[in-house]
Image (cartoon, rainbow, N blue to C red; front, side, top):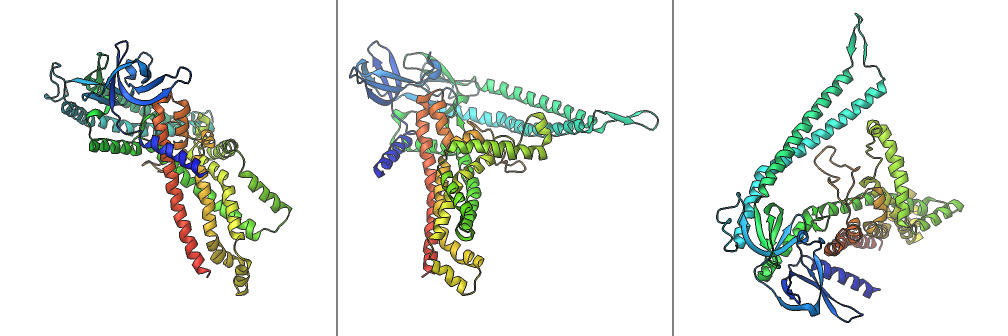
Length: 538
């Protein structure tokens, strides 16, 4: 068993840690005279023909007719291979990496020293200067528009909510639009006037938003005229917009220190940035945040409930048919498939409690077909996982209390302490290490569960985090991202499985590290409590 665990961890560590290392670029010449430029990935032998094939990551997905950036080449067809020192990798926000040779940097916003003639290839310093100039202009012109658009979107959402609420109240009030006046006239409906004002405000906000989007697209189109002219291994030239370049590097000319800096930059991007390219590139911050928050919410749900249930079963309940049935049910609940808990969470929490809360608190949204709590969210997902893991805590709590010698209970009662005082001051502290063991097992299991989350609120890409600066700051009704579902999505739902495999190993390694960090902290607390309360009982 230990060897299997070691092999599993070894594979994940090797593949995950090597995913961000800048591998060398190879230019190969095939038997038919064609050339390829790419990173060597792996070799494989055909068991039927006994011929070796080599897989290369060639990038340039937008230049390939089949839009593939991984190609297999028969080892026998390779006539020549080299590692050119002037080959570059351009990491792009779309269409994956571009592999080629830098020829020129062109554009009106580029520095004069960067936009030279194509007669001499551009240098990396010129490309870096051009990228810096374009990013400065984006920060000065496009970033303020994006911030203003974000503020307008919040105002639009608030105005829509107010309009939905007013329309609902007006429908509930009845069809009358006015009331008779003293002199036989009519008095205008105040709700109708407010609705008209809100509709006018919405139209004005939409016009402002459309105008800002038009300005943003126009300025972005102007910036996209700044390009890096690249040449592929086949001799074709292609223009890559500077605004699409995330970073560039020359792996064949990089030393160990430069590769280490590149590796650390990629790790920082992984931890703090948002994903891109259908989650196959970029960072995993929303998934990390959602996973950690889900575990904390689940812990706050299952641990108190499990401990209280275990204390009742172990200390207060009288042995009988009902208690035996409850114990059998608790033991059997631990073996129920997790997808069953997901179905239960969907029916009980989402449609049951969530639907009832919407009818009480947000009836106007129910009438408009936009439920708040009556749909999947991180709150219902955490409660579902709490139910899934609470049997483990119950059993661990009961076993920990049962392991305490009966003489301690009898001695405490003989000294005049009540049963509750004995429980709070002696039994619970002495059983706390065992309770923590159940909590650790529950937390480790919940961190890797995916099936219940797919039904109760997890999504491929969450535009907003469950916590932000908007009131009430904690939005437990929002959907969220999760590292476990991220692994499933990359491995089975990605349009480009080969490109997604490095991120699969990285995400798996990151999930293991989070689980080890949280369980390790809990184990330290358990050991400290065990040492403290063991010494107290001597």
